[in-house]
Image 1: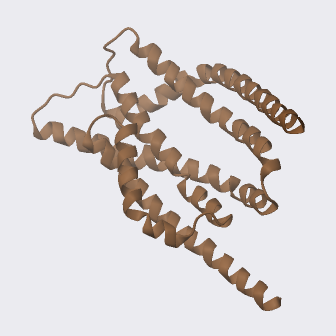
Image 2: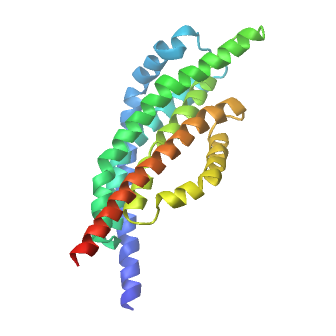
Image 3: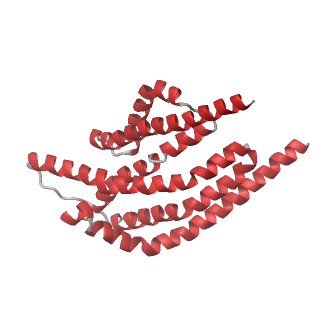
Length: 247
C-alpha cells in the first residue's frame, strides 16, 4: 500500500510539472508569434537568402513558415524551464555524485547548443546552398526557391545539428557516473557511425547531400566526445588510485 501511494504521488507530481511546462510553452508560443516576423525577415535578408528572391507557391506557405518559426522560438524559450522541471522530478532519485555531475554540465549544455546553432547556420547551411546552386548552374538549371522549401531545408539542417551538439555533454555525464568509458566508445565507433548516418538520413530531406552534411559534423562530435570521455575517465582513474593509496 505505501508503494502504491508513492507511485500515485510520483504520477501526480509528474502531472503538475507537465502542466507547468505546457503553460510556459503556450506563453512562449505567443511570444514567438510576436517576434517571428522580424526573425523571418532577418533570415531572408542575411546569409544565402539575400542572394535569392524567395517565392510563395501556396496560400499556406506564409502561414506555415510563420507558425514554424513561432514554434521554434517557443521551444527555445521554454526549453530551459522544461529542463528545470525534469531536473526537479529526477533529482530525488539520483545519487549525490550524479546530482553534482548533472549540475556541473548544465552550463556546458547551453554553450554547446549555441555553438551548434552557430555552426549549422553560418557554416553548414551556406555550404549546402552553395553546393546545390553550383550543381544547378553546372546542369544549366534556372533556380527558383520557394520560401517553404528554403525554410524546411534550413530547419532540417540546423535543428538536428544543434540538438546533436549536446552529444559531448551527454557522453561526459555518462562517463562521470561510470556508465560509459572511452574503451566502450571506441569499440562502438563503427556502429555509432552507421547509426549517425541513419539519423542524418531520417532528420533531413530525402537526398544524400543533406544526410552527408549532417552526418559529417556528427561524426566529428562523436570523436570529440570520445576524447572528452577519455579526459574524464583519466581523472577518475587518478582519483581512484589516490584513494586506494590513502586507504
